[in-house]
Amino acid sequence: MSTAVAVRRMARHVGFWEAVFAVIVLLFAGVTVLRFTQGLGAVTNLSDKFPWGLWIGFDVLCGVGLAAGAFTLTAIVHIFNLHRFEPIVRPTVLTGFLGYLMVIIGLLFDLGQPWRIWHALVFWNPHSVMFEVAWCVMLYTAILALEFSPVVFEGLRLERPRRIMRSVATPLVIIGVILSTLHQSSLGSLYLIVPSKLHPLWYTPLLPYLFLISAIGAGIGMTILESYLSERAFGRRLEMDLLEPLARGMVVALGVYGLVRVIVIWKNGAVAMLLHPGYEARMFLLEMLVGVVLPVGLLLIERVRTNPTGLVVAAVFAVLGFVMNRLNVSVTGMEGAAGVQYVPSWMEVTVSLGLVALGFALFAVAVRYLPIFPEPGHGE
Amino acid sequence: MSVGLLFDSTRCIGCGACSAACKEANGLPLPIEEHTTAYTWTVVENVGGVNVRRLCFHCDQPTCVSVCPVAALQKTPEGPVVYAADRCIGCRYCIMACPFGVPKYQWDRPIPVVGKCILCAGRVAQGLPTACAAVCPTGATLFGDRDTLLHQARARLAAGPDTYVDHVYGVTEAGGTALLVLSGVPFEKLGMKTDVPRQPLPLLTWQVLSKIPSFVGVWATFLFGVHWITKRREEVSAYEAQREHER
Image 1 (cartoon, rainbow over the protein chains, first blue to last red):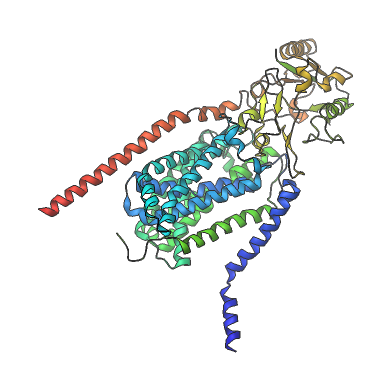
Image 2: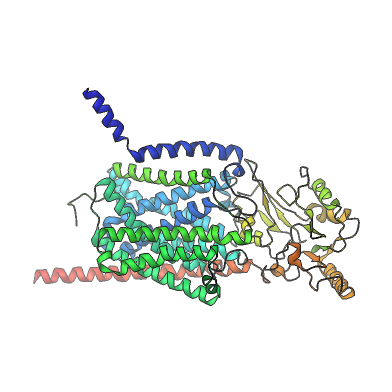
């Protein structure tokens, strides 16, 4: 009797999320086999008319953008020397590193011949934005690994390498911030070359600046979200004293971003489309509502900002709005000129979900084995 | 000398000899498809009773060449925009960026490459015309020096103002292309893109990319400067706090 109860208890312990994870991993493995034996056409809804889909729009554009918290926070701590933010640097850098890792794995699915990914290192074309992004992403992933390495050394009790890494922390952070500024903006520059294809509600010569500043806003949103999830999963308290000032930074970033976007569509005349909103205009309005108006509006209220739930809800809006923006630039805004509708196949969605799940799983493993969070009561 | 093609849609009878010759000259698999694909680099489409060829425009400053991260696409001095399949990583930025929608992908293959008209670069290098121009029975597709062809096109416009729309497509599109097209009906009615910018598109990204070296220098100096100042301020305040404490 008691054994049966124990077994049932164990079965219950394999909870909902573990089951979801297992299903996603299984499907992911199946799609991977199909992708590499049958080609892109067999698993995606991509076509000559619509060559970039969910894997670029979500896995790459959102993956890189949402990992922007890492360079923002390392800059705050190491360049502006605001050391009180130190406790959330480690989980944020880990999130950033895993984010970039998932971006690279996503790229291996999306590239037609991923085994040639190293070609960008050998065959140069400095006129290509993609060439620049490739170099920056590669170098910055290496920088993130180095920025995270002291945690690993600490976990393995390797004092000497840890001290060496600490002595080069500042130059590493400066290089990381430069690389991030470059490629976060360059993801926007990718679309500068399609003025006749990208809808005027999204096309502007300012795309690189908009991509950078929205990534800073959403990166902070992601840091807040990641703190909240850690609180729930690992029984940690929410560092409201750190997250609240960060949220104010997010308000400034998203506020500037929203204002510039309004000025852009005012000046290029696309604002008139909002009067009789079609498909694109409705998506634009939804994106601006979720990604700018709601988070900025909510966080301007002090009572919301200082309340854990209010703060997290606003951060979720910022992250969702960011994802909507990147998908609107890469999908919604490109559909009109392409003359086709693109909806990702379930297999494309599976790969994207699988990467997110993999990221979460690796984060959980890292937290278990490495000193990611400061010991409770160990405050400086 | 830079070569080009002049396609006069008023002279095309839609026989499709160009498509067949292209397949043969470039070793492409049959059948000839309805629209251009990675395996069919040129087709004749009948749009509202008018025969119009689809093929690469071979821009003077090609968008595809500028966006390719591994320089798999190149503009040769003779004019053709060629593709080195063994370099291509399959990012498909060329397909996404081409203002004319020309490059196509082998979506059905596990080891795919891009396919597009290469203006018979091999034949052209030997002094031969492109396969499509060589077989065209009506002279609707002419091969030759691009400037000479442009003269010819303008002469036709001048001689037949009632026959033609008063524009040589390819003179200004995307900053100028090696393929020139004449038509008796407005070009948009032939399904040709008329919203293509008049200036070369690579400038749009180059004006950002070319600033990167100076940006990196200024930004690095600024970031280090901020670090230096805030760090110093921290040391000063720590020192003062200690003095205060000692007193």
